[in-house]
Image 1 (cartoon, rainbow, N blue to C red):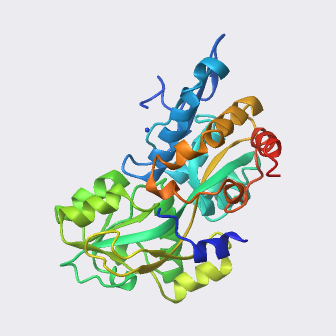
Image 2: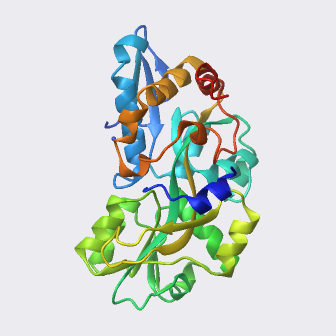
Image 3: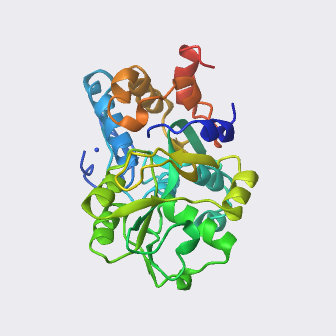
Length: 330
């Protein structure tokens, strides 16, 4: 089943400190290998994914000698660039930015650097609907009501920001389209919304999301549909996008299902990262898969065979392939 069909029919309901110098690449000592996984904001699911993987890896450090850390980072684009520059070993990234990094397309950073031919995938995780939350008193009822409003576009380097810029380009919007184009990090925007500093926040995130829950319980706010001709065009032209739905009742103020679109969260690395290290990280996740799925509601319906097939634009890393073949999944 293609990513598009899978995302169209399924919404998966939907962390420790720095490793000395932030983002240090795998450094080998006589006894230990240090691995850094880039995540995202601390209220997002990327942070939970990275922390969860490291927790599983570190349970077996005495056996394989790998010590894993998963600091909060700027998100998808920042993680891919850090992996490319050897500042991180692995990182979380939206499936669309995995595609654009591999092909040197769309994002200005990826275009200027050219194709990231050493980009490798490990697996996909949860689905990520593009989510807009607006204050109830903002007058925002649909995505097309955002012009003239105070909107947090999120920080440069995040996958959410990149996707928002893709939509803005298609619509002919610029930062001047909004009364305020804020650049708050994902962890900061719920409070800004409830402090009446912005009218709307955006977040491509797995659900349920702590940030969305914070925004909708701390003040009167609701999830807004993201639909229309431009969204339909993006879905039609890109296999990594598909229709998605945020279930009604998941958040206060949104009793009915909310239509939007989305993609998949993926784990990426570089071909230059040691195959044995990658093998052990992948093994830690899938040998303890039931434990991993319990670490966040967005993981509840994950299926290993789908995780290594859907949403992956880059080739699988040889260390991951070794494990998957051992399991008979390839």
